[in-house]
Length: 494
Image (cartoon, rainbow, N blue to C red):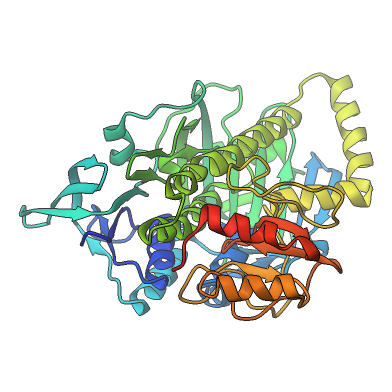
């Protein structure tokens, strides 16, 4: 088990982490302290960037088939439409979000993992671990009380906001955690004007509210507790949800037949580091966000896709494995910080109290969302395709004289194109026309590069794209030796 990876937590993040590593040939175990899967709907959204990344391992088609497509987002102030965002213009094969209750998402991902030969070990608790320069020694407690000691190369804590792994590491938040209070209600809505394939957000001085469709005819209401008193964690009365709906919505809608009512507090935080030696944190164990924008589950899955290929290179002797592994925190922490900032700005704008400022906000919102560049920018932020790793230590040299995406930026795939990083090895893609320099690259690094060249984004240029679909390095075709230097510096022959 010296080259194995132990994953604590079998939510979507842990399942994706295991599937990514296993398809690349890494032995993995997944332990989950809960004896059975959670049946609550919880997170609902799989955004565009997440669908792209899951397509690399083949999980996306089943998720799309099981869910419902959401194609637009609307922002209101009461009955006044501030802006509408259609996702059809996004440069992706997946120009929509998939609405799917988290329990169903987990079931599909667990079945996908089982096809790769890995079963989740339920009722097995991580009860302790120690790490050194060569691996992690772990103690597991089984349902019958039996203790098991094992040795793994790496331990990954995907065990949620109350992460035992994080607590054991003692890593704290990079900034003071912020606490907020929220309501979730899965209900039927009578006299409802909302389309079944669109998302609705409402700005109100009393607090933020969103309404979105759910499979089975229900709607989910997500609302901040606001400034009024009386909040208590647990199960709120339906009347409280109705009061919020009347106060912040367009009026005339009645919530009935609740399937789930939940009041909870979130301690929003972004850890100072997602790594300590051979132990890593991902998903809510590393960063917790408020539910505005439904980013949390997606952020965690993208953590897994970022880390998995780097672990493979480290396990197989990459020339600079430590820098690769350190880049995980640097890249993903910056994205989490951006999400926190975006959500904070959105909440601030949504809850302006001064009538003059409300008028100005609505006017500026109409102007911004009325322009195509504004709509595109907002849609790309919501669907997460605009996230990038601009300041990553493993980026090649930027050259803004060359057209197209720079190192650290996502490369959009053409519809029907094989996803970057697909297959049973985390290979880099070369986007280039054949040339002597490009041909030398393919001869020098046959196991690191995909077998076939992909079309270049611009003539006379070469792009090296990471297994997770971000630019690693770029050069003119005649300077392809710069790509060779990158591959020698950060990777090894697999």
